[in-house]
Length: 232
Image: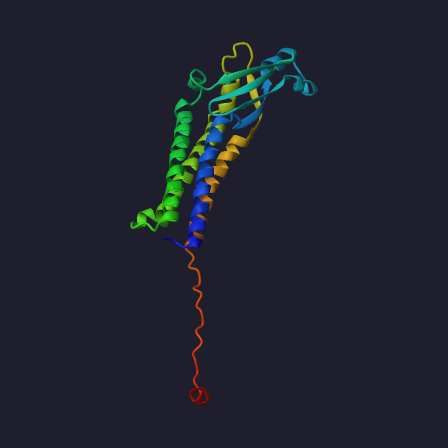
């Protein structure tokens, strides 16, 4: 049985892995990976709008991995519309990259559960095989954190190099053309970053659990026998 010191740290490691699992689910469910401002270029060109008038043609957009929302501003007031990525919009995007991001996150969910299981195993007993011990916990956390980081990098590449926001903004638009003027990552994106950070923190936790505690030795006093004690 592991000592109380290791049990406490392994318990913390299992909690961090479980929190990473929950964070990825939240990131998948909440459609706030990125938000931005979109300019109705067609409306600007029609009225030859100047700088003070451009505000009337700037709308909003936000989206996640499955759905999103945009507000069109083309000079006649805002018009809000909801959209879903699947099954039609994904064909206008880099479908392979988008599906890869989803598969990576689903894989990260499984790896987070495996790393949690290994931490619980080490909290209950000392494994016979070294691969099931602290090294195994580190291995699964490196894999889980790396997969999440790869998903994050893939999403950033999709936004920067494949004009993800502009493609979504112009989906099924026949009369108007929209140009992205501002983009920023939102809470779902940063939740994924926190998930990867949780696995990185687990490596530190496992390393701390291997620090040997100093042994507490009780000092045994030796009995001294004197001549007076013998007389008594």
